[in-house]
Image (cartoon, rainbow, N blue to C red; front, side):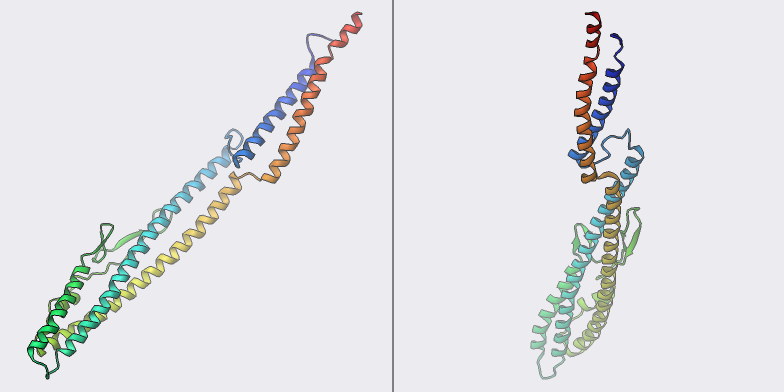
Length: 267
């Protein structure tokens, strides 16, 4: 028996320190919900999760870009459908103006409405969405993934001659009305093509958005497996180390009492 070196107490102290560290880590994981709070023991997992989280963030940004593009195309669609109604009315006015039983004074009244409708088309061609022109020949590159790849969103040009020929016409005479009607038919045909093109673009945007959502969900799940704590399993670990710390504390107290036995030898 010795006094200066209490090996039993040192061993109990070492065990207690290790259990106390494990208990602290378990408590930290349970309180934060994450098992990657301490990089010293999870360096590889943290590196992987950081990459996954960064990719998820980029996917979120790409989703926002797609949402803006979808709103852009929906705004275009709304304007084009209104133009469709305008062209329908203009074609009706062109037919009414061809009525030989009407004097030119009546045709002049038809033409006033015709010109106002034409101005509506001209004004629509200048509309923008958040500072970006809605109707132009320029294609727009829309982000489709976390790597910044894009697809080209075809532009719709309301300033093309097919449309401007309509807005520059009149129905003041039967001859002018006949000519205007032919141009309106051409514009209606072009409008149908533009709306069809817009529909295919919207379908592409919707499909891409769904793909991004699926990728984001899967990456988030992968990151969760790395980072998020299993509360049930960790609660079991916490209970185990809590008991070990309590018993270790008691055993350390007992080990510190061992040198007292030396006194009995000296009595």
